[in-house]
Length: 452
Ligand code: ATP
Ligand code: MG
View 1: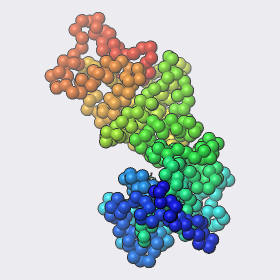
View 2: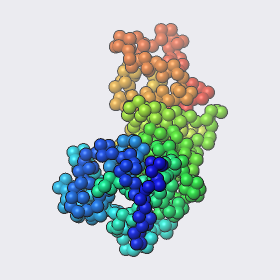
View 3: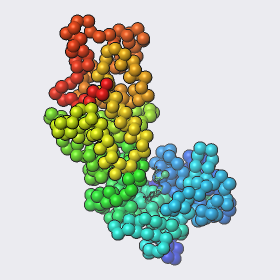
View 4: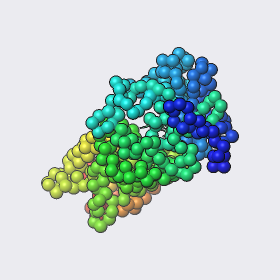
């Protein structure tokens, strides 16, 4: 694209921003890479006399030669006009009305150009920190562009002539791999602090470097993230950590002081060591999760969250035990308290917190390797997740690796072998000590209550 820069068409209409138009020959987006349904939507809108563009992440990803996650369309038709064009269309959203055009399982999102951001009016509401609460005014493409977050997210692919329309230098930033906010970074982060999380997500996902002004503003504005509703933060957090780049994301979030807003208790636990060992379980969990995604395997939110909050639960339970609470109750109470504090930052759905607790409460049950308990445990619906969690613990030295190995072998054994494996040791001395204790790592143990 660099070589054609000189011939890029620059247009300035009266009152409009300077625009660069990259013709079809000057960029690499081909219609064969665009979802057929997205093309149908674009052509239909155009056929009805409206302007229609692809915009946002899909244009960015197509330019990078990546397969977009979804295709977003933007138009000058208002939502009711869009609805009249498509039968298979539903209007959604309260903060900003959007049209969803349904094609079986694929949904093409069609937004109307948003209006100017400068002047406040009845349709746009800011809170005292400058955060945008409501924003529902329609406008033109020249206005819409300033509402977008990063220059590389603000490129429009025009179905009329297959050109890429660039008002903010997004194409150049694309070529240099720079993530740059449109406008003043501090103001843009104040308007919507979630943009800081998006900055981290895109920097990691695209391998782009952050623009220095954007970085500086992030360091200052990170605490503003605390004002975002916890349900929205949960959604963003999931996108961040189930991306396939969880470890890098985690490191970058910590670097900018954003992680502590999302997971305050985890941040505290990370700065403490146990018996001279840094708390590594979370790091391992993130690494494993990235490896699984790279291998095309699934990862679940509850498993990662169980890893995030494991150390805070351990620490709190130990404090409770030091105050005289019995182990079982201490762990139950600690789990409840840690979860109820966490949901103030990232409100997780109940089925997630339940599954997370199950993973935790299975851990002590893995200590019982004799009798009928192992065969019952293996039938538990969360056995696999519990076992994977046990592996993490064994990799980070908080349970004996032999215990994890035993369970690995036991799962794969036939019934006969399983029976042999679970027979109690013959002599009474061994019987008294039992496998249960022999696998217990004393010095560095963070093994929770023996609920079994
Ligand atoms: P992804 O690949 O994750 O879908 P995306 O850039 O498409 O990335 P979306 O959340 O789908 O992200 O948003 C689509 C577009 O809407 C963005 O590219 C951006 O132009 C704009 N946008 C989304 N969220 C914001 C925001 N918080 N502030 C400003 N613009 C935003
Ligand atoms: Mg998108």
